[in-house]
Amino acid sequence: MTIYFLCFILFCIGLYGILRKRNLVKIIIGFSILGYAMNLFMVLLGYRFQGRAPIDSNAQDILNMVDPIPQGLVLTSIVIGLGITALLISVAIRIYEKYGTFDITKIKRLKG
Image 1: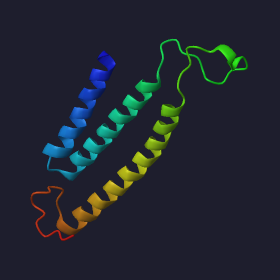
Image 2: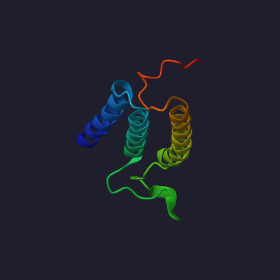
Image 3: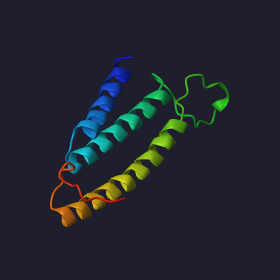
């Protein structure tokens, strides 16, 4: 239970970085921390204490088996998170080239 609480604390740190910081680089780091917290939570959902691999030649009577689906979802999430992070960094670089600052309160001429 303590590990889930620490995962929630990591999630809150990422959420704080996204909502309260005004620097684009810090917001991107907050998104990354938030993604790490979600990945950790997914891995913890599939974990079993002294669990065995689901691939076994005598798969008839495996009672304490680790769930492989969250592990596959986390691998997919890591790849998607890498793409999102690269996109956010490229957008932040373009904003810095155009406005000369990473502070979102000073950027007033943005139009959607």
